[in-house]
Length: 216
Image (cartoon, rainbow, N blue to C red):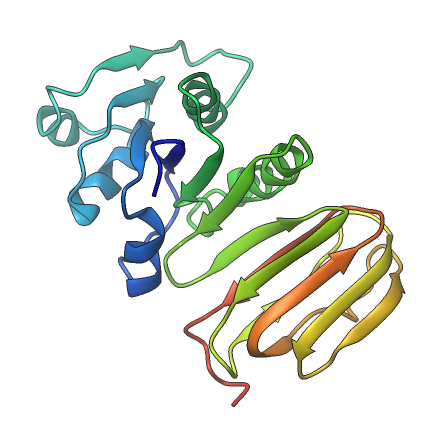
């Protein structure tokens, strides 16, 4: 993996799975506030630690004294995660892995990570959000492929109406489909292996559960 891949350590849930281990191989790392706790689990040393540090306990801070810190006031116009992403982009990031972006105690932050990921995808960045057990990939006009185990579950919620939506190699395929905003038609599909998604217009997210094989 090239040095243009950055993993941003965020404050949500994170489990060290084989898919996560493979995804972050060769990556550079930036921690956002309390997301630094994941560095211990992953066995990595971030090159930068940003945030207001309101969710960083003293013992965590003591364990990473050699990591450069970039503090911000609590009253700021961006989340710690957004600041970390901006720092990664300034360092040449082209692929962004948002680890700890899903789940956790703050559903507002999790939702914002999904929305931000779509915005980044529209700017041409390759983005993966992961908790280790669950993954999300933005879907904007164009085509993407997601390599999923046969029988694993995935959904495609839209952030507005979707037109020209096609889903191939799934139990419930779609071709040139119009998805009204708020429709549940694309929730709980089942992968038959590598799934191909195409979209003509709109914004969506592919939420996958690669370790949930209840669709087998």
